[in-house]
Image 1 (cartoon, rainbow, N blue to C red):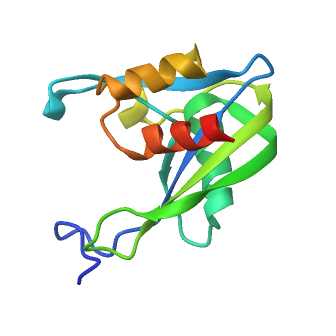
Image 2: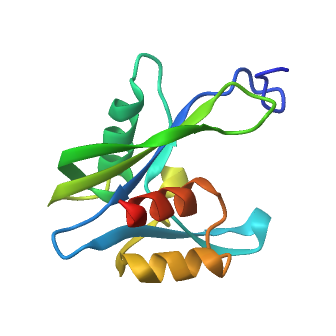
Length: 145
């Protein structure tokens, strides 16, 4: 098996965050993905940078993409991204949130943040409104805890 992802070099671990406010609402991002012909929902997250732990990656991505920092963190587990790679996606739940401003890169400029009841995010996942599987998995794990 190779960790090379379509000629881009070794795959990197990633982190995804279920951020819940004190009313239990979940931070949800939306953006258009023309390659996949639509607008999709997703959770804050992304690829780990050199030298970062999975939790440091989760904290950075939550702050950059959603403008949120959190005082309480809980791991929801880690899972292989694909069978062909040793890269893993690390899932977290974040609570006791502090809201700030998004720090989006040019490629993230259309990311829109909204707050959803957890049950509605699960419904959206069953309707196929998430493009990537890590978000729905993290939401289901957070719901069960």
